[in-house]
Length: 230
Ligand SMILES: [Fe+2]
Image 1 (cartoon, helix red, strand yellow):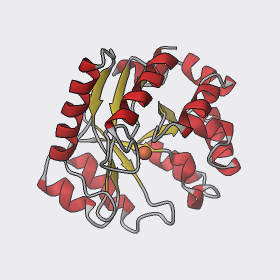
Image 2 (tube, rainbow, N blue to C red):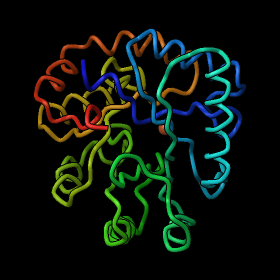
Image 3 (cartoon, helix red, strand yellow):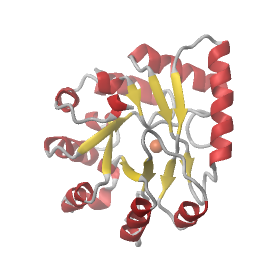
Image 4 (cartoon, rainbow, N blue to C red):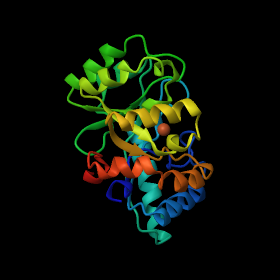
């Protein structure tokens, strides 16, 4: 179960993205994660150019408030914060101007639009890597426009991009297509991290279900998941 003690993707800092809305909701979600067996949560608020214009200061102060509240509530959980950066028009400026929020040894969690691959994807990936970050691509199984281009996933893997599967994809919660892709990624040994992508309580019951899913167990037994090393 080692890999499922540390989560690398969630939206638990209240009020700054489409995740937990209030401090009480955050605390309830963290308690539920603890109940499920998690011991360390690296929470990753969205940073986008349009919708969620967060920055490292907002996220760090949000984390401090959350940690204070956890102490008051006597909830023992190791909490860290990084971010989920959208590879959008504003991303390269952020990369060039400010140190980005990462977890572990400079792992940078990024996501892409669900509509289309960013036109300058290759350039962005190159600049991220030459700036010294390790790229973790969030929920690769959820980008529909790649579902008929499976070589995209092996290309990513071959260029050193770590793929982070959403655990809830395994039960088909997002879509049947994402489920199939998640299975394919596991069968082809392309997955380096798993994450809950927890936003609200709707995710919890599904997470409980998907955590016992056979392919996930198989993935953990292969020993390649990096969650447990964080
Ligand atoms: Fe997310």
